[in-house]
Length: 350
Ligand code: F0G
Image (cartoon, rainbow, N blue to C red; front, side, top):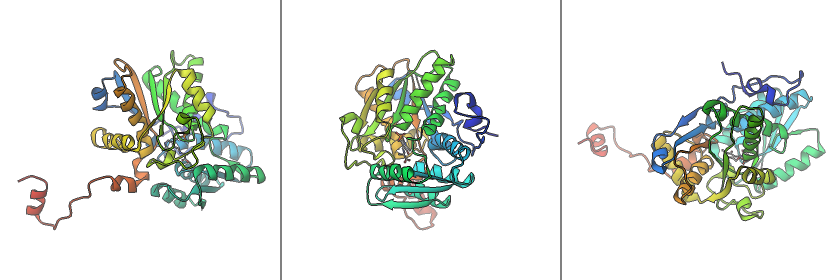
């Protein structure tokens, strides 16, 4: 049975005797070695951390379990978040299971179908606004100040606490920190959390080193790279379609303190990495997740020395969450009669 994040890493988390040790089986996700890309780009060892294997299909569950446990501990009755989809799916699941009402505000354009389906299935109250994620987050900030509702976006520090446990797992699996960690950046909570985790583990003597933090935004939604708020962010990777990240400063600190980079990748590069992951590694991540791999391919092309280096790419969410994109960019299946000769011909068997 899976322990869950709270129990496994309790000495690193803000747990009191009153904190309910809840879990849906989050964390302990696979770290799998690359079969092809590692050789293609010539790095020492390349691993993918499959965060889509969490209970609601994304890394958000690690932070949500802590945020919800602390909300329950504090006597809260309701939680609220803005979301491009995954946070709302996770909040709705943990809210439903642990007796909290879940209120969600999402941008009307660009929440992937699977994520909406999840929030609906878990019984959240969902409001879809004619605005961006950034607008939704401003509304959530205002509403949670006005009413006794706990915000569970990553502006809630308990989210960051939970998410840092993914860094612990990587060090536990590899025996030390990798040389580089590649990660998509949207609202920038996750890169902030990983960096916190790597630092804390090093301080606790669990690792000797810390990785260079390599964060990637989508080109049309790259406020940190451009150094300005993007009013109308655009990208196929709807999860990271964010123009004014809440943890902007945390991401910049992670980059600068770790000697890493924050750069952008185009939608074309994201989709090419998305296809490559699926068809040559057997890993179906959502488009935003592919930004980490697109970033690795980009810096390898630019000549970053990767020989002998250990690299981890975070695959933040499952590809099943966004079936529309998967189907849209693929060759449609061949439609044939139920006839063996036609099938043989179509498959090139004869
Ligand atoms: N990858 C996926 C699959 C995400 O859902 C997100 C963020 C990110 C990467 C970026 O992480 O925001 O911590 O920098 N999704 C949020 C949401 C915004 O509402 O689900 P970040």
